[in-house]
Length: 180
Image (cartoon, rainbow, N blue to C red):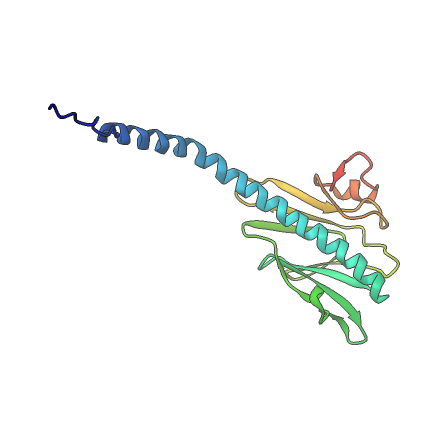
């Protein structure tokens, strides 16, 4: 009786495994730099969205409390928070709206309109829903890309868009498109 041997199991050779790993490494080397740029771009966008959301929250809070509210941005540590006007002056509310939000690293933050006190930039919102005519410009330090959070009139919502010049801001920025 003749013995039959089963087919030896087929596997990958060492050379095949090395070639596959080399191809994967080359693909990662090509794709990784573009992923870094994408992440940096998303961080700038997220920071602009955070500022715009904080300004919208200030309007809601001012109307609900029937008191002026301001958004404060600290340019030294790139954080922002709300403050409510009390008889003692502006203070952070004790509720959840008193939280401090991070805006991200490697950003330069500038303000047109509003108030500046040292490293603090402030935009005030009134109980009737009107906001200061202001623009907060976020600039990514690595490549100079900019986004602005601005409102064209005191009654319009703050929106994200391209940077307005001081003259455009004063004239309502009719020639500049702001998007959400």
